[in-house]
Amino acid sequence: MTPPRLSFEFFPPQSLDASFRLWDTVQTLAPLAPEFVSVTYGAGGTTRDLTHDAVTTIHKHYGLNVAAHLTCVEASREETLAIADSYAADGVTEIVALRGDPPKGQGRFTPHPDGFADSCELIAALAERQEFHIRVGAYPDPHPEAASAAADVDWLKRKIDAGATSAITQFFFETETFFRFRDACARAGIEAPIIPGILPIENWNGVRKFAARCGATVPGWLAEAFETAIRDDRHDLLAIAVCTELCTDLIEGGVEDLHFYTLNKPHLTREVAHALGIVPDLELRDVA
Figure 1 (cartoon, rainbow, N blue to C red):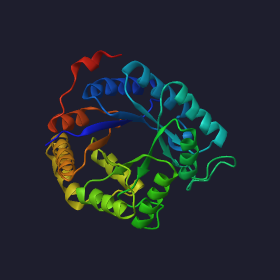
Figure 2 (figure 1 turned 90 degrees about the horizontal axis):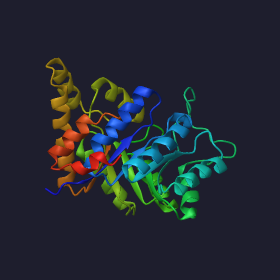
Figure 3 (figure 1 turned 60 degrees about the vertical axis):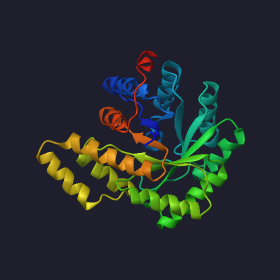
């Protein structure tokens, strides 16, 4: 089995302790030579400056290819594109373009009066600059706001047609979920790479709540397995085994890239990568 290309998602720190966790995570995973790493944008644009600082620091001090999340929330077109231009000026030319979640307390996304109405408008504006590799989100399980699974495929096609060059999926727990979505995208004429998003289960109760919010299906067998593993104090062993099996099945089905949602906790991601045969380059530990 040929080892896959990896990428990792981090989120920006909002406290001193969180800063230490982020940099420990980067240092732990950088030796795995990721194709890129991404840095998230808080709901409602709440971490805009923190995201920018984390992106530029990782790019400058670790030499990693960083994709900065950029959303349409709570900002005008001018403000949003100014952030993109500042990334380009710092040598960061990858963007994960998203509509973004509404601010806390707001049930639905409402565009800024002078802002982008949706992710497609943002993607088109970024594409016009001809400076960025634009990645977007995709949803193997229906997005909570989608009318149907077919609507998610149609929306992804619109984003690719607007100028996106690849997509990263929301996490899922069964390979059939991804392959069914990938096949539907192919039938719709989507030729851009679709990278499966992988979430190692660090905290079962937290992941179950997260899945409910984003519409990811939790199969009954998985819930039963983790309830037993927690009772027997084997949570991490099960998490590594389940995630490794998921990744292996994806690779055997033709997947060449995997994107890990690390939650700034690198242990499980590193163990899964090792199980997949990815050997760390120890020289990269001291890049910073």
